Amino acid sequence: MSVKPLFDENDLLRRIAGRDERAFQMLYNTYKKKVYTYALGIMHTPEGAEEITQEVFLKIWCMEDDLLDIQQFDPFLKKMARNRSLDAIRRLTASAKAEKLLTLNYQEEHNETEEALLLKETRGLVNAAIGRLPRQQQEVFILCQQEGLKYEEAADRLHISINTVKTHMKRALSALRQDIGTYSDIAVLLIVLVIFMS
Image 1 (tube, one colour):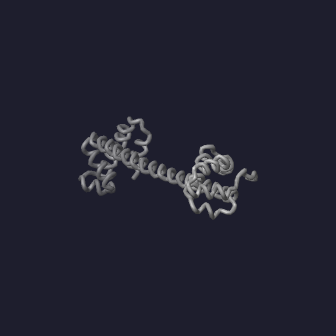
Image 2 (spheres, rainbow, N blue to C red; image 1 turned 180 degrees about the horizontal axis):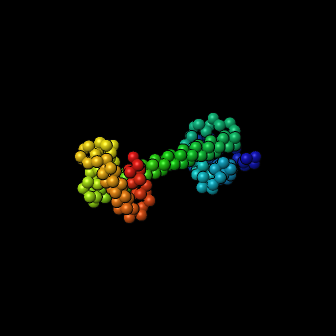
Image 3 (tube, rainbow, N blue to C red; image 1 turned 90 degrees about the horizontal axis):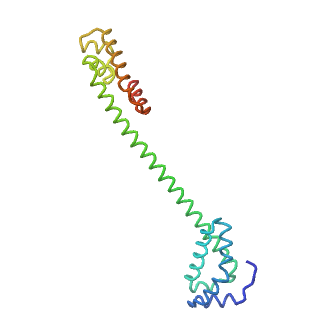
């Protein structure tokens, strides 16, 4: 920004403050390349630099009488281009962070929803498989596995021996694993394992 213009900058700014469009066009044609080059060094994209250039000159046009307070236009223009570029980078960074956060939240919520549906479906499969067990195996499995009774307590409740409870439980688990094992979805099998181990 060392080349001196072929006109009086202060006079040009005074005319622009008075809404002289020809003066503004002259200023724009003279300085747009400087602003663009400086902004490009910060933004690193032609599109970003072009946008900053437009913003800078729009701001100059809107300044009106404040233009009369500018003592040295070249340093003022450089500072404005720098500030606008840095503001744009901050906006882009904030936008990227916000988008990342929204995406992360969506993925977490989406995953939670999928897991809840899968768990619901899996419990449905387990309950259906339990319903296919012989009656006493069903009773023993529900008491011991789902209600958490000890074998002795289940034996007392059903008026059968502890060994009979153990036998029914062993057969029930074997039948359920075989029944549910026909599903190939590894996630289903893992959740079933968790249900059986809990």
